[in-house]
Length: 178
Image (cartoon, rainbow, N blue to C red; front, side, top):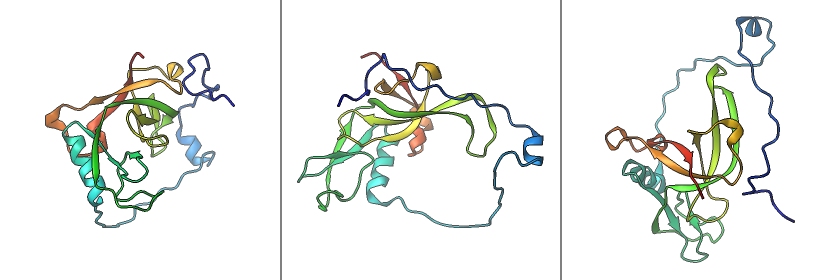
C-alpha cells in the first residue's frame, strides 16, 4: 500500500471556508458554545523531562530523549519508554527542522471568535526523532492552499531576549526547500 505522505502532487481535500460570526448567531443559538468563568486556582509542575525540554527551547534548542533499549528518539521527551518500560536518561539535541505530518486550517480562535487571517496548525515530525513523534504548532509564511503533508519546515524562533522557556519560543514553522 502506497501512502500519500510526501507527495507534492496530492492536494489537500477541499475545505469549507468559515464565515464571520455575528451577534445573531449567539442570540438565535445557531452555534454551540459554553461560557463559564470559574474561579479556579491551581499549580502545575512540568516534571523533569518537560522542564529540561522547555529550558532547551529557551536556549533555542529542541531536546529529545533516546531509549537505550529500543533506540527510539522521543520528542517531547519522556522519563521512561512506554514501549520498553525502561527509564530514559540519554538526552539528544535535534534539528529545528521537520516535516508536516498533518494540518488543519482554522478560521476561529480557541474562544470561537473569528480570526482576521486563518491560522494553520500542524503536527511537525522533528528531523532526527523516531516515527510518530512530533509537536503541535503553527505554520507561517505559507498560504493555506500551499500546505501539504510531507512539506519540509524549519522553526522560526523568537529573539533570544524574548524567550521564556515555553513552546511559544518557536514563533511558527516555515516551509523550506528540500
